[in-house]
Amino acid sequence: MAINRRIIDIFITMGIVIMNICVLYLYHSISFHQAHINQISLEKKALESEIKYVEEIKKSQENLKQIRHDLRNHFLVLSGLLENEDISSAKKYLRKTMKQQEMITDFYTSDPILNYILNEKLTIAEQSEIQVNTSIFISENVKIDYDIIAIIVGNLMDNAIEACTRNNGKGKDITVIIKQFKSDLFIEINNAYLVNERYTRKEDRVLV
Image 1 (cartoon, rainbow, N blue to C red):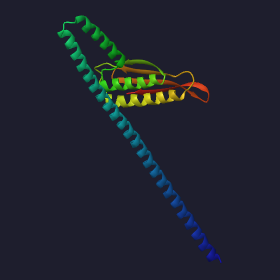
Image 2 (spheres, helix red, strand yellow; image 1 turned 135 degrees about the vertical axis):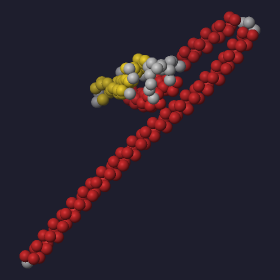
Image 3 (cartoon, rainbow, N blue to C red; image 1 turned 120 degrees about the vertical axis):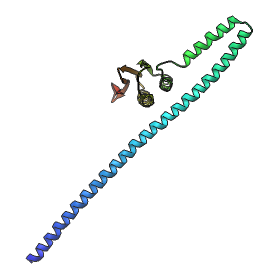
Image 4 (cartoon, helix red, strand yellow; image 1 turned 180 degrees about the horizontal axis):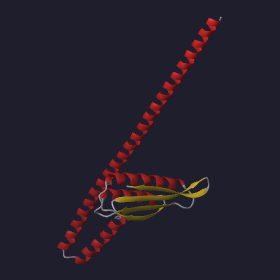
């Protein structure tokens, strides 16, 4: 009986050891797969950002093509008026065209892609009746990767606009601050939103 009892204890002990090994293996396997899933999720988000950036570039290029086409037509009209020596009409047409161009695009930075994205996002905000306040200063001599900045600003603006759109009450406003500090760039985008009926403010800050 004592021998049988000892054999049973040995089997129980071995079973517990094997069970612990299986649990540890399962834990490490789950951890590995979770890390793999997280990595895939990060890569997916990065890919989505790249795709969005490429789409913004395409829109910018299409916009530039349209501007060139419009300018060509404007030059033809002005050329015709000047050939007919109708200086008064040429001046009026030029003033009218300049006012229209000022209404179409605001100038924020020297980089055309970032400038286009800012104008595009501000137009979307305006269509959603969101008040946007901007304070942007970037020196032309600053050495930064505008491709990365455009992606960051575009994503932050999308998040801010989405948050304000969900807010049906007061406080639908966004503040965009982009300032240069020596070789660094400070980006801050604030937007108001409602959480549990309490008015709060969300801030996204990035130092590049």
